[in-house]
Amino acid sequence: MGFSPKRMFVLCLGFALLVSCTPSGGMENDFLPALIAGNIRGTDVTVILEVRESERVSTLGGYARWRIAAEVIRSFKGGYVPGEALEYFRTTETEFPPPEKGSRHIVSFVLEEGRPVIPDEGYHFPWSPELEEQVTAELARSR
Image (cartoon, rainbow, N blue to C red; front, side, top):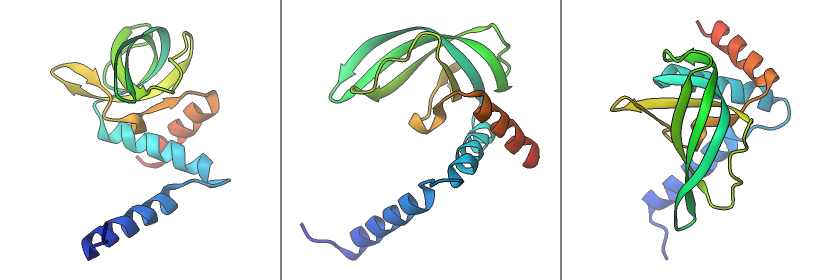
C-alpha cells in the first residue's frame, strides 16, 4: 500500500488533531466543559438525563444499538422540563457495558422529524456535579 501525498496529508492532519485534542492533566478540566458547551450551542437539545431502563435492540458487526428510557433532570437547551420522560437510541461498540439504571448523563441531540437523535458518541458524557458546574460556568463565560 503506497502513500500518496493526499493520503499522507490526511494522516498527518489526523495525527495533529489527535495530539491537539487529547487532554492531559489540567487541560482535561477545561477541555470537556468547553466541548459540551460547544455541543449545546450546536445542537437542538442538551439535557442531563437519568437512565430508567435500557435494552439492547440490535447488534451489527461490532456495534450494539440501545433503546434508552430516561428522565430529564435538567435542560440546558431544547424545551424539555425536569421530570419529563425521554426515549432515545444510542449506538456503542459491543464491548461497552449497557447504560446502568440510575446513571446520569449529559446528552446533546439534534431533532430529526421531531425525535431526539445523538449525532455521534461525542455528544454523550457521564454526568458529575463538578462537570455540570463547569459546563454552566463555561456557558456563562461564552455569552
